[in-house]
Image 1 (tube, rainbow, N blue to C red):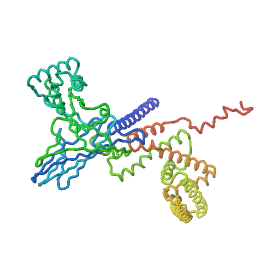
Image 2: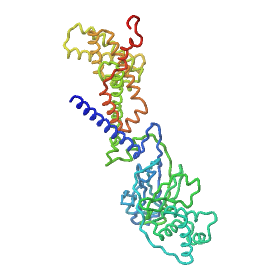
Image 3: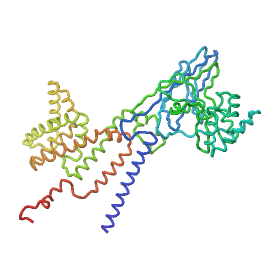
Length: 517
C-alpha cells in the first residue's frame, strides 16, 4: 500500500511539474512569436515614424477628407497613430476592410494641410494582420487590336506557369523585359506606363484570377515627399502575393509597407480641389520592449498575459517583485543541493534585494557593521532579562539607531554611499541580530560564523542572479517563465539525497587512517 501511495504521489508530482513547464514555455514562445519580444537583452526593435501630408485647396465650403491608413500586416505592426490638423475634427474609422483617418470642418478656404502620423514596428517575421479579402471577379474587355495582344500574352504566360502566382510572375516578367515583345509594347503604348498595374490586374481578372492594383510605401530612412507606389496584388485561395513592376534591384531589397492593401480609394477630398498626398519617414531603433509590446496589445489573448498591460508605476514595482522567485530558486539550490546553512530561510533574498539598491560592496560593509554592532548591544541587553516582545522591540530600535548613526557619520565625512544603508530591511536585520544572539548563547560563536557566512554567500549568489541582465530581461518580459521556476522549485522540494557538503563525512573512506582498515 505504501509503495502504491508513493507511486501515485510521484506520478502526481511529475504531472504538475510537466503542466507548469508546458504552460510556462508555451506562454513564453507565444509571446516571442506574437509580440516579437527578443530572447536576449540588448536587441533593438526597428520603428518607422511615417507622416502623411495631405494638401488641397478649400473652396470655402464644409470639407471632408478621408485618407486610408495602414493596418497590421505580415512584417509590420502599427504601434500608434496620431494627427495634426488645427481647426479640423479628426476621427479614425475602423470599417471592416477600409480603415481610414477622416478630417472634417465647417469651412475650408485656401491651401489646407493635414497631417497623419503612424509609428510602425518592422518585424522580422510574422504579424497579426488578417489577410485582405480578394476583390470581386469582373470581366474586362478590350478593343482590337489590344484584345488579340492581351490574349496572346496571357496564353504565353499561362503555358509557362503552374498557378496564379507563377502566372502573375511570368506576366510581369514580360512587361519588365528590356526589349518587350511587339504585343507587349503595343499594350504599354496604349495604356501608358502609369496604368500598367491596372492593365495587368484586368488581364488576370479576365482569366478568373483575383487581382487588383494596391498602393504601398517603400521605406527608406530620412526620405521626404514620397508618393505611394502602384503594386499588383494577386490572390489564390486564402493567400496573396504582391508584385512590383518598377523596382530596381536596390529598391526590391527595401521594406515595403502596404498602405492600401485592397482595391479602393486612397484619398478622398470633398469640398476642395487639387489634392496632393506626400509621405515623409524616419527610422529609429529602440530597446524598450515594454513600450513596444504594450502598443501591440494582447487583449483577448490569455497566452499573451503580460504585466505590460499595467500602468508604468505598477510595472516598475513588478520589475523587482518578479526577481524574488529567482532568489528563492537560488536559496533552494544552495540549501537543498549544496547544504549551506543560513540564518532564516529567505532572509538572504531580502538582503540580496537590499544589495541591489546599495550595490554589493556598500551593502556588504553596511550589513556587517549593523549586525556586528547589533550583536554587541544585544549581548549587553541579555543581562537585563527582558521579555521576548520587549527585547525584540529594543533590538529594532537599536538597529534603527545604528543605521541612523552610520548614515549621519558617513554624510559628515563625505561618504554619500553610506547613506544607502537605509535601504536595508530594518525588521529583518533586527530578527537576524536576535536569532544570531540566541544562536551564540546556545551553540557558540562557530555556529554563528557558519550561518552568518552561509547567509552572506547565499545573498551574494542571489544578488548575482537577480542582477544578471539576461535573467532580469527574461523574468520581466516572459512572465510564463515564472511557472518554469515554480516547477524547478517543486522538483527540488522532493530531493531526498545527500547534500554536497554532507559528502565530507565519507572522506575517511577515501583516505582511511592507518590501522582502521
